Image (cartoon, rainbow, N blue to C red; front, side, top):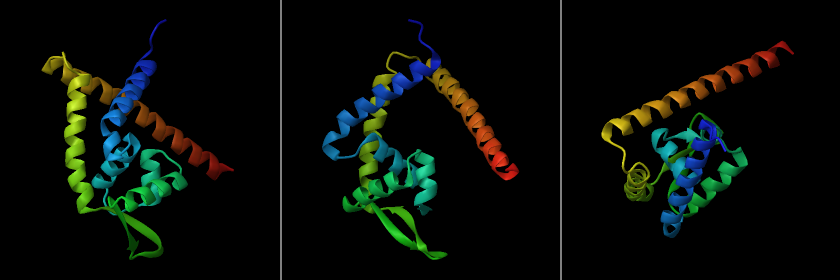
Length: 154
């Protein structure tokens, strides 16, 4: 069987998620929740809709995830001063503390995953994967623009 780039990237991501989830089982944080918290750290004060788009889940799925993380004391909702119907999402101090431990865990997992690669090979791997991501992001942006233009034409 010939392995394609898409298969290798997808399978590697699957194995990484599985290893991550196994290591974080005791913390109760899944790979998807970690991704949500990471995006929330970067875009603190974001509304739920745009955050759902960023992590590519349905808004109802994100709402349930936020509910669970809020119950765990990791996320808080604050009223949007510009729109009484909307909520802005923020990390709690507890989440920031837990994210430090999670970052150390992901760093160790990454080291395990790329063990045996020289510094130059690691840099090249990152460069190549970023290039693939950029190509696909550009294609996604083009597809979105084409869909919007088609809607406007109808």
